[in-house]
Length: 390
Image (tube, rainbow, N blue to C red; front, side, top):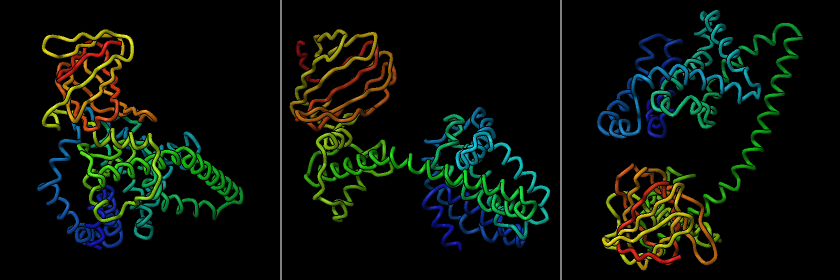
């Protein structure tokens, strides 16, 4: 059991909750000593890893202050009620169900030993959102209803729900019919949600696969790759290093047709990067032209300054690998697309510029046109730039 628990901790933060679940089961069945023995090894391994390695990422990605700590109870309540609402399709039923389950567990607390898995699952469900709230309460209460969390919650609450429904079904025929109707409604609702998700996510999944295959083709062909993720929107866990390893191992198919647009999506993700410092040692000549309303002036220092009340669209054509610096007076999103003669990529937010801060756009796709949507206000681009008249 220790080996499985440690393996779970290595895979996901949900492993923390599941180790707690095992500890609660042991506590209810055999007492504190058994519970401590159950969690001792996985807890020791996790704490050692956290202190040695994990704390750096935790501190970088987690915002914890008095405001977020005060929001954790609301976050947990929103997550628990959303689990019931979205699982059953009965909007508003979550609050009633959670309060009812809590009251039932208190009244039936003497049965906790016999129903240890059900009781432990309910407690772990609450603990899951309390733990999740530490890292995500700053994102707002709506983050608690993310579907990836609700599946876990539904699985943890299912045993206690089954126990309560079994007890109720042993009584009057009316209660049996009501439970049967509610179960049937929830089943139909779940099937409908499944079909909706299939229709919505099917095209996204196909595009994700095509973009990853196009990224693999770039790596296989020896292209200059500077991006860290082949598809940051839909496959953010897949890194360029991981994909390169898969290509070397022959794990990525090569004879799959990929659309021109998805090839451009892959180039945009892997060969255009915004940040500091530039990822290209030297810069080539860059032709810049305006795409929409606004003014652009070329200064004596070779920098182009654009001014507009709204977002400004410009096109960059690099003669070779190169970079341009960009500085926005107001700050905002820096959005890009790649265009070729036969297709255009989807939009990708390269960076969110801080006011008055200089970032660099590095580009290793000289054959394509880089379409930029600059923030409103005054933006200055510097490099070996030639301003092309409209």
